[in-house]
Length: 319
Figure (tube, rainbow, N blue to C red):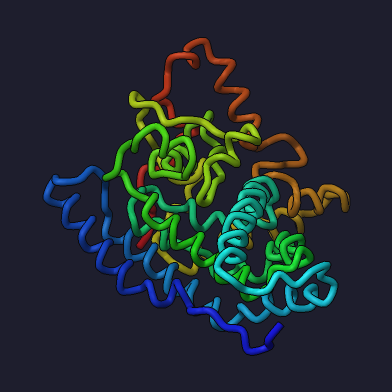
């Protein structure tokens, strides 16, 4: 394959579109013409995280690309680049994205970056822009190895991955309710993704889809939004800050603090890095499975869909 293969920087070119649509949604929400909530400090933090993500991609994206390019020499085929191959790559990458996203919720080392995206207590288009600065250091890109070995060029994988993220931008809104049932049955929609960002015990670690919700339906991680639900967004324990640096690195600091605590075995130290978020060696914390089990044990759990689970902080504590 040609070594000068190149694709457009989709997300960088989309920045004006992001700015225009955020301004439009913000104005419509303020005028009461659209559902949703905006808090200007939260929105500025999200947009700052997005710009930082673009910058770190430019500075450190070579790390992920270099890893995939090294794997490229072991490919079984070279599928080339044509419109059918690009479309096939888009679907294949979306399938892999589902598993990468699922791993990002179930392995704390990967969660250390992905937690940034879930740290906003609001759900609007700026939430889509709240992206991590450390993703290239987690090694999550290696889960794309099967795509490379199958013959999809690493640059093509990066391109369709950008298209995947661009698609997900519009689903971060409360302004769009439910779409026709056949649409909701196939693709990821605002309704499905609101569930993913919800802190309700039944919603934790559900609806991982990027573009196609069929993966969640196939692998048992789908749950539908109910009209009588009161959504609470954010984390089970919110970061409580609008400071972008703290948002970016809070979980990394917590991981190393936990793993370096005195008196632990090496197995316990490792578990603090790779076990699901919420793991503790002494049972003092709860992960999503334990939170759900405790909620289901409540007599009123079968009818109460308004309880958000362990209460998040009502507002960030500092600017």
